[in-house]
Length: 120
Image (cartoon, rainbow, N blue to C red):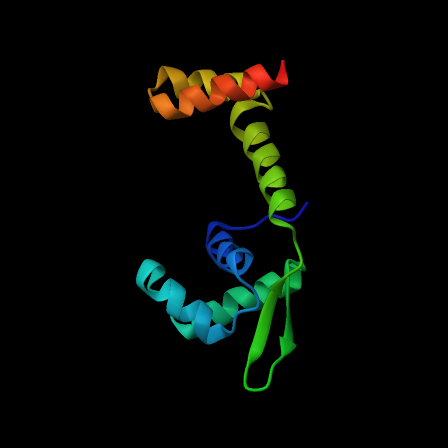
């Protein structure tokens, strides 16, 4: 399992939405949200390549970055890590905590009810 940092998730989400992207495209899309410079982006991209979650190909004018990791696989790994770390692997405890803390909207609750009904 590969650990993806919060910063790396931002880049991965951009690439999952549309790939490939150049360093300049990534920088432009994240600049207002994060304030990261081109050099910061390059540092993250190098780390992510070392982890094996992205790769690049040489384009005509710039490197083109692609993901190596499927979004669904990454989400599943993150969910399992989060559940294990915070709720000792107990999804029911997570949901009950969210309900008790009023963190679910009526729409969230309706969706959860429908999902549970379909799985029963």
